[in-house]
Image 1 (cartoon, rainbow, N blue to C red):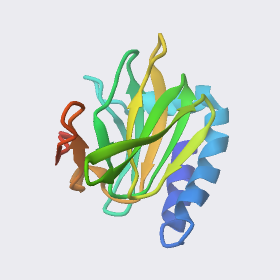
Image 2: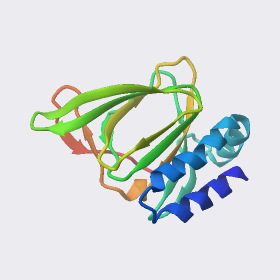
Image 3: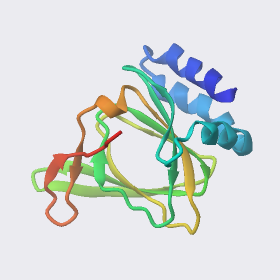
Length: 167
């Protein structure tokens, strides 16, 4: 299917300095065929819900995420580069940077259906789905997301703590 070819493309460019840009370029045409992409991802989704794991290795994680209406993530980092592409709905992003006070907002962006966002390894952000329907996205990470030590920040205190991602 289209996802197998996409994963092969991702794997072939991982050693390149511009790997995230190449991954983003390979992801755009998949988003344009949202119906076929969705069918492949939903076939991989576990029965109880949760992310569809398209590929997981030490060098690369590819996930199909279904983000419910009203969802707001904690402020978090990934510590590895990430490329996100939306194929149903919109994703609200708020970007932050670390400073002496803890964490400071630096900007906002709405990632529209069909668009791709590339995040460097030092990015800190929060995602939300303010729409009325489930938002669906492909997330690609330059490493094993599930084995990566990550942080999240408390909304009220700005305190940094380990990010809980169970699988």
